[in-house]
Length: 244
Image (tube, rainbow, N blue to C red; front, top):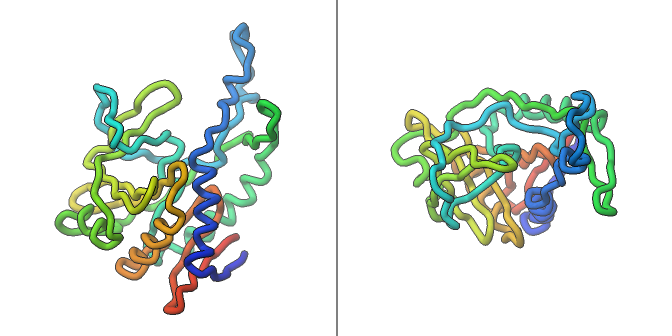
């Protein structure tokens, strides 16, 4: 395992890599099949993401086309980058060590349109114990005030060809150009705070949001695909990073 520090500016390099991954969509393996194929061996089915959450938020049906200002994300992207309390770090480290070995042993490369792309024989299914990250009146407003962002509409989740639903009692908080936090409220608690980066994001925006949530609520930030945890920020601006 490794732990090191990054200053807040160079730390944005981590999120620059993240934004490239989050907005790239691999061609589904099924799309590579011949249209005349009527059946396939289940053992040949491969995954285009290495890890997924075992849970989705409660959803309301989407009956009309979502508005342009409503954040939209694939179900597989739910909680790929998310916040946890510091007290959960030991379990996060355990899971990342396990996931690192799993991911490497299940990864293989294929060529799509002349480019090498990874696919996986199996996906690591993350099972985490959800604890309230924030409680009280208007928790989404509290998050927005802490990070200096604007509250926005609930995210809309989709599958490849259909809308899955709009996150029930969900919210988003814009923190910079094409960077937003998201989550939902359940019984006046917020069990999930995730982060999403779109095309050409403000690289520093998520760094700033992390440092403020870390200082105010003691939250750490996990990037499951990239396999690292942002642990805390020192007075001199260094961010402590952990990797398995």
